[in-house]
Amino acid sequence: MNKKNNWSRIERMKKTLLILIFFILLTTSIGEGIYIWHQQNGFNALLTLLQQKPPARRTPLLAYDFQNLRKTKFPVTQINLGNVVTSTSTYISRIFYYSVPVKPNSNKLEKVSGLMNLPVKPGNYPVIVMFRGYVDQNIYKPGIGTQPVAQVLAQNGYITLAPDFLGYGQSASPSADPFENRFQTYTTALTMLSSLPTLNKGLNSVYDGTMSADLTKVGIWAHSNGGHIALSILAISGVTYPTVLWAPVSTSFPYDILYYTDESDDQGKGLRKVLATFEKVYNTDLFSPPRYYKWIKAPIELDQGTNDHEVPFWWSDQLDATLTKDKVDITYNTYPGADHNMLPNGWPNAVSNDLQFYAKEFSK
Image 1 (cartoon, rainbow, N blue to C red):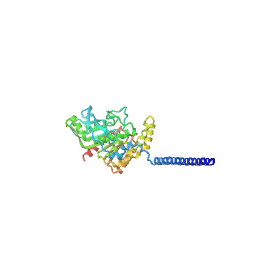
Image 2: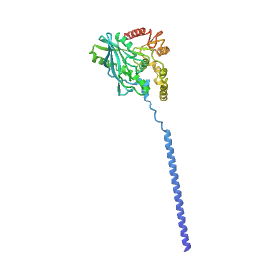
Image 3: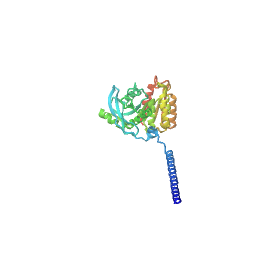
Image 4: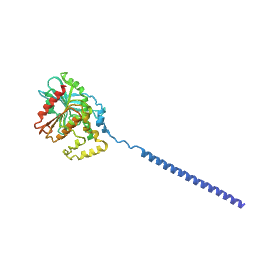
């Protein structure tokens, strides 16, 4: 009996031990499986992460590169006449307004003001769109940089339009981004050209049909940085408007802005920092006008003073050579001893040459 009981206990212990061993083995297998599953999923997650493309870098200013601006359709906005600023026996100056998109292809529009000059006598007159050079906002008044020539043009039977650009005159504020601010001059100028068909409606509202624009005869006049804008929009738009350029900024971007950094209080330190950030994201070649001068179709008169310290005469020498190589119809006039504003002795000859150039081109 005792032997039998002992044997039963041993059998129960064996069974218990076997169950325990099985449980340990089962637990170990499950644990290893869970561990391997976690490891495998972690590896797969890491692999998936490595295979993912990094988020695309934001490049909103590519909308302003020359290739994209060339494909952009600029709106036709109404040119409206404002108050008379000056009225003389030979010409009238008055404010005008139109609207420009805040960005290429944007439906949001902002107001731009400008100064218009007209002959006093009723008639149907050719139009000259004028682009000024750089002017500090603290001293800016509508017409600075263009008005002396504009008065002569109006006295000789032309209607002139000189936009103030965003941030100047009564115009809306420009972009806070310094490079977009710069590129908005292109969209402002291109919208000026696209909106010219509305000019006669604006004139009719004030002059009852006695003053009109001959839109078959449109020209451009530009000085200094305005010349940079004019060259850029001639390339982008492909228009054939006869164009006069006085000492245009015609060199490559961004050298065309770095050249003038010695004029700033910090010697350009701030601008170089912003430019360094810009160049990390963008290829500056896409924004450099000389790469696209071959697109220009308009006849050009280039006027340059040989004593110009703002735009070196050799920039215009190179521009003449480049445009000639690209088979652009260009006439190059130099004025010995004349400075950036064609003073002291080049101004009368330059304006006389401009009048002859427009008369010849509009008679074709």
